[in-house]
Each structure stands twice: as structure tokens, then as C-alpha cells.
Length: 136
Image 1 (cartoon, rainbow, N blue to C red):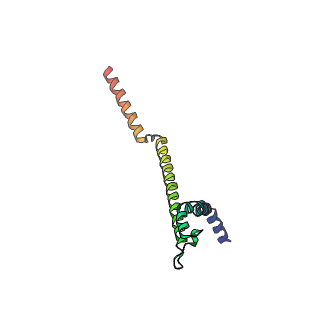
Image 2: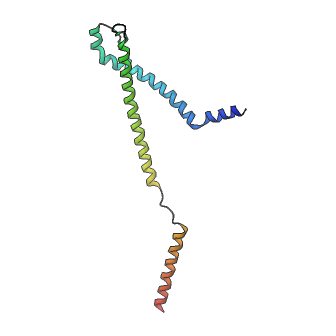
Image 3: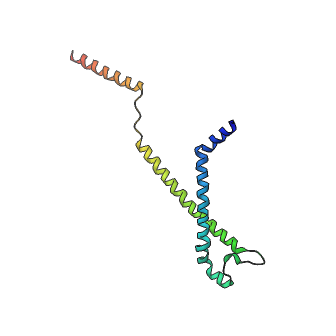
């Protein structure tokens, strides 16, 4: 019973839920990027090479049984994903820095300590006493 309770607490912890959502979104994003690379970018970049090699699909590119076409597609996919992630992370960092700057500006000045208040009162009293002595 305790084990089930611990499992429930673990799964409902914010970090685990965030991680699960991130993995699902990353999987969907990966499928989109793979399709973008395989169906749009690669044909645009490699159509002349494919025509010269007399093949219809990059996956058919091979030399002595080595399918370097699939490898080229994977490299292009990696470069696109890396570039997109770089810009996403830079955007997140910029947003975090802006938020931190706003938080610093919004901080109220620190309230004086009890000692500082007492010292101010003492200084005012000494000033009043001096004024009274000067009048007398």
C-alpha cells in the first residue's frame, strides 16, 4: 500500500508531469521535423544529385550496398533539429532574463531595521534637546 502511495506522489510531482508532457511534445515535434526534412528540404537540395544518379528517392542512393542516402537524410534532419532547438532555447533564455529584470525592478526597498529606527529617533530627540537648550 505504501508503495502505491509513493508511486502516486512521484507521478503527480510537478517535475514528472512536466517531463512527460515534454517527451510527448518532443515526439510530435520530431515527426514534424522529420517530415519537413524528408519531404521538403532534402528533395529541394538533392534533386539535381538524385537526377544525376538516376534514382527517385534519397533512400535508394547506395554505393556497394552502403545506403548513404539515408545517412545524408539523417544528417540533414539532425542539423535542422539542432538549429531549431538552438533558437528555441535562446528565446527561452531571453524571456527568462527579461522576467528576472522585471522582478529586480519590482522589488520594494527594504524596510529599515529596528536598530535603524531607534537610531533615527535618538538623533531626532538629541536635536530637539539641543534646540531647547539653545532657546533657554
